[in-house]
Image (tube, rainbow, N blue to C red; front, side, top):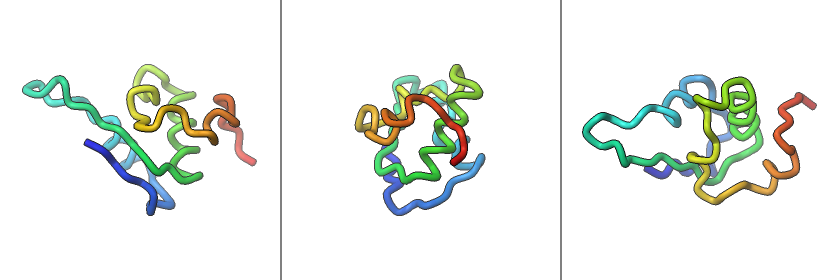
Length: 80
């Protein structure tokens, strides 16, 4: 499943649950990917991955590889 978040300016914890929902037992090869991350959703994903990287594995979620804004942040999730 591909989530295009290009027009999504804000997500919250409910959005994280949708993006990182485990695959159903009958379709273990299902993959969820994200494209078009804007600043706030990206910050939330980075914060979640920093707090619990085993649950919020960004490597399996990003459709386009590492976005430039993620590379520039170098894994830091500090607020501006």
